[in-house]
Length: 115
Image 1: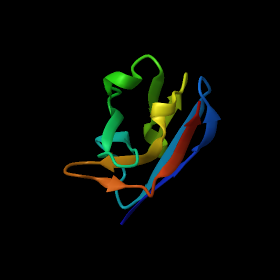
Image 2 (image 1 turned 90 degrees about the vertical axis):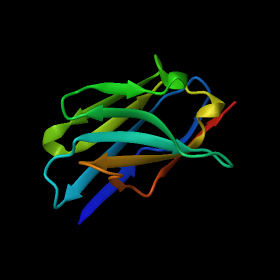
Image 3 (image 1 turned 30 degrees about the vertical axis):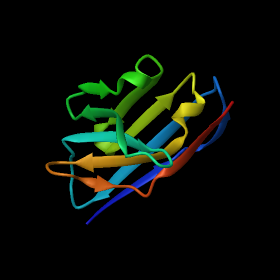
Image 4 (image 1 turned 60 degrees about the vertical axis):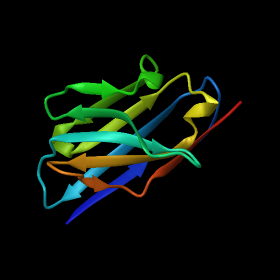
């Protein structure tokens, strides 16, 4: 059994910053990759950023230079620092932790960026 819990969402004005946190706990001691996805109303869920246990990072083009993903392997925790937020970043942000396959999902945290 694995639990994935996100925190840190909220309402922010355009140009502002937020930091999301996600902690994975349970029967798995180490995850191959941990990442953040988002889903806006009427749109499909998309990958925002992912980081491997070795520190390799990947970002969707729309957030490069604005978002930074980091990870504490000892705590199975992943963070997403979001700067220069735009209204189009508004979405529910989901954390994913996986070893192989689809992995485990959190319940999501709402991020709303007002113009």
